[in-house]
Length: 191
Image (cartoon, rainbow, N blue to C red; front, top):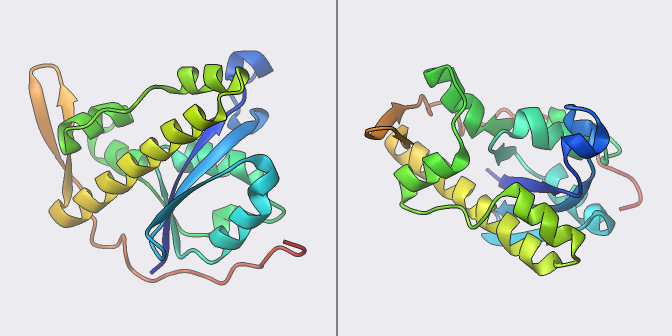
């Protein structure tokens, strides 16, 4: 099964565009981990033709808040519909159990003993200053954290979150995560 773990950085924020709709934003960079090659890669908008080829051959997309944010925003650029690729949104899985949203950093610190290397507003500042390498490094670190949380959850059927008073185990039903259910995706033309 080819799993693409991914994350998106934006070139603006909701207050810039006067909307809370993720599709109103612009992408600065997309970072991925490809389980087939065990490699990380980053794509600027001008590189999306190469990204589409990878995504179109994926069996599943894995992200954090990806069903609500990343996939709709990326779909704005894609000539087809990426929602036809099976996805697993780790935040959605956690929310299903807890009934609330939890920051990626809280899960990473409690589950993996690591912290994010920054935040989205810092990445936006770097982008605006033309420091693309910093944005790339930050995004790929988030992809690595997301992939490691996914792997941990599969192995332990749980993740951990940091809360006031300590660390809490959150049981997740991962039994269906790796079932083969993909459908063929119509490929883009000209890429």
